[in-house]
Image 1 (spheres, rainbow, N blue to C red):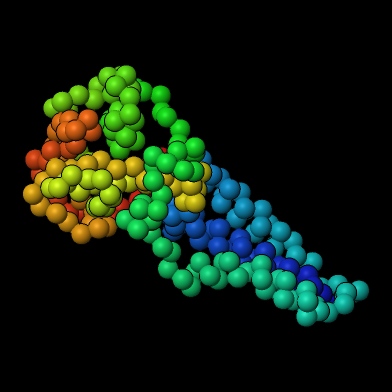
Image 2 (spheres, one colour):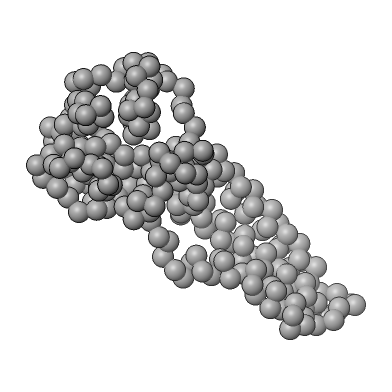
Length: 233
């Protein structure tokens, strides 16, 4: 009995991917790449790939070993592991102010992929609701968005074009499927104190309309740590 080199190589590749999926799930890093609707892919992938790797390892010894792994086949298997190595070795880039400036929730692909939520007055008003309230009076009425509505929002600071002087934007990314389809939604904050881009803040105050746009007039502004799960769903 001898070791089948090809089966060993496949077992290693399957183990790498299984370990990666399991690591994503255990550490919670899955939230950086996927939305809750697709978490199952990581769980399913980790279980199936781990089972496949185990089967390969259990049957690695054979009395009729195949040909050794060729250069071309070996390079192909190495390429299959490169995405995992890249993610583990290179820190993941957070979606922040720069990404928000490139992905406008009101135009382009983002507009096509945006899904207007069903208004529900019982639901807590969030960034997405204020965005659509700026576009639709009926949506604002259905959500109970009106002058004086008190809100507490947590997000990061951005400075998109078109803001009035004395305001900055508080922004969060919404994820439907995965981070690749993340769309930024912002709420204008009227204040005499400005903050650098990507500063995470908790802003409490009340809504008012200025120039046809809903603006949050803060009563308290507090710096906070970036949440582990940065996205809203």
